[in-house]
Image (cartoon, rainbow, N blue to C red; front, top):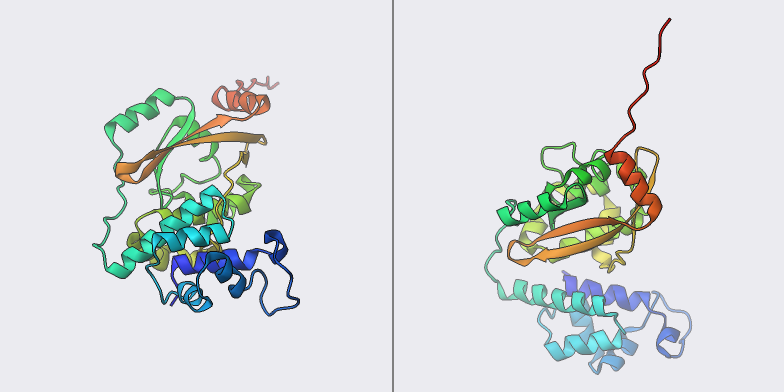
Amino acid sequence: MGTPLGDFVRAKRDSIQPEALGLPDHGRRRSPGLRRSDLAARAGISVEYLTRIEQGRDRNPSTPIVNALADALSLAPAERTHLRYLAKITGGECAGRTRPAPPRRDVRPTVLATLRLLEPGIAAVTNRLGDVLARTSGYELTLGAAGLLDTDAPNLTRYVFTDPAARTLFPDWDDVADEQAFDLWLGPSVENSEWLTTELAPVAGPDFTARLNRHTVPRRGVLRLDHPSGDRLRLHRETMELAAEAQQLTVYLPADEATEQALDRLRHPAPQRLRAIS
């Protein structure tokens, strides 16, 4: 049985072409990407040890080994952080650590007060599962307009992968889906595993499972929305971690003047004219 760490190392190895690292192309091979022997040589470890890591038979590599793999794969800073995180949770599972508490659903009063100060802007508090725990009226006007908030317990991850309206709301749906799948790795792993097994994976289908196991570190660029009003919105995102609660406060800011004007129209719709009936 594999591990998140092994899956990530194998996925990155498969995605790298030898010439990108200045290595000779050895010709046709059965699978794409970098050979195990090339990666092992670059990391200074044996092919047998790399195989054990990728297959999940070694779940607790040392910090120097993890750093050597990061160097050998030429990982970007965000990917290095993710690799270290996966090594930590993989080692924790192996050591049989205490079951993590489920993610909190209550929001601190001071955070709620911060949301009120952000009105009528666009902001929300979520957890790593994608539960929308609190939001401003601006969030309801924009991301909630296409049905995201129609359930008693709105969840952005479930919405993205199971509601057809999400593919219309997010023109860059693939990027948003990668973000939501990636963030699931950052929550309490046992709680995530149970939620995925019992609720999300059966209805989200194989596309979701494939994205989860690819460990694609998202770009998190400008978020584009095709709002039901007909406006194309472009939003910057600033996310503040609420580490003690494993929650995030995300504020959405207009990325251009056209978006700013469209948001103003949403907040202050023009009054409809009355028609005289003869």
